Length: 275
Image 1 (cartoon, rainbow, N blue to C red):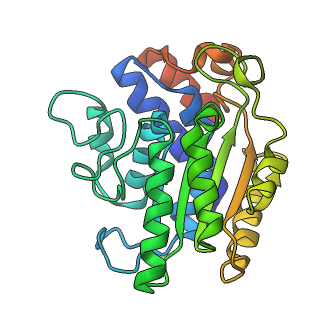
Image 2: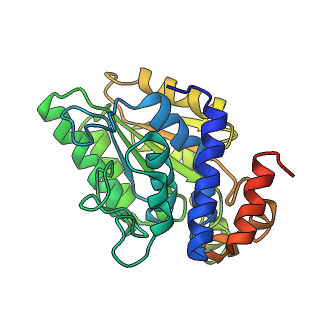
């Protein structure tokens, strides 16, 4: 398997741009901010097999911040779960790739999610079930910083700690922006690391969540906590729209924005160093 995680994260980022650009509009900011995480999980950390997407005992990933569905699809396509050509059907009639992930449609999707907070609760339940089954799986979950304003996130977090779900590793995409404005201005969630620690979680704070080496090292450390009796929260300080300057510059406006195929292809050339 190709272990060049930087190249893989670039491929994922380019495929995000390609499929949303083909559609013309989408939640591009919060997709681009998690490319490095998905590269690390799907190409290094997780025990998975694209040829057996329902294999018993596999590790599972739940994308609770449903807006990042296209990013997950890009990772799955690059990992070989389905043909990359299918990415261009994103969110169109009859597609197997709806805007938010659907476990009944897409190979490799382990839980339908999108209503903010609910996917994380499902991840906690899956981690508990895995513990009871004794299947040895590690359960990974991704939540958003705006999503972290939901009370359901904290209820699930409290339950996970109470049940000592050390097979659960969660990530917060802390890009500091949500649909309306800066997270701090809407309903500040800081100090985030201290809050998760107070809820009984191990906490790893990654300075640059768009540095694939830092993300890889954080996941490695998180896995060392398995068996220690506590779930782990990895806080990824990311940039919304990362990798495309004009999208980054939109700020909260890149939460869901228009992008033409021409703009997408130009951004892809820049990312690949062709311009």
